[in-house]
Length: 117
Image (cartoon, rainbow, N blue to C red):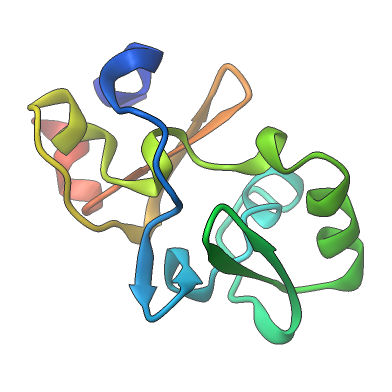
């Protein structure tokens, strides 16, 4: 498990989700899929929800409904910024394939290489 998963909640003030392209959160990946499928899945624009200033895409209607019922349960920590970068007092974008779930929270990182630092 990456050490970044152990960061304090107060490391980043509440901010909107990371917008990689316009207002599309987390490069269009389905936030619910990390929890239900155990892997990243690309969402589709026709299955989306507006939340915290960004459009969140989903891979299925069921995932859209799950997110809409409890968005905080699926939202990534640190507004979707790289958890390792936040631990070093800066922010950077993330790679949807560089992720972990720790204590039922999703953490994203710039790349999987930060896990070996």
